[in-house]
Image (cartoon, rainbow, N blue to C red; front, top):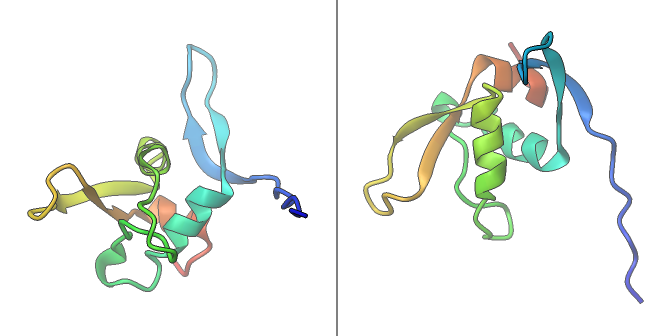
Length: 101
């Protein structure tokens, strides 16, 4: 019998989201985004992994949403796999991931 995992509510962040013409609103960090961003806290230069602890590629949606919110930024082109985006943690990403500032 499978046990359903209870999802945690996303934590609010300080990264404003500008959608439409209204005032900026706070974006919420998902658990997948938080896990990925936390991986860069102790890495040289804040390098973020291409794969998770189980060897699965990090979702392109997770990567792109973190870039769009200013929590991660492209770092360099991957010479082995040009389609894979190598990213690093930004100061805003470090803050929302709960790392030291």
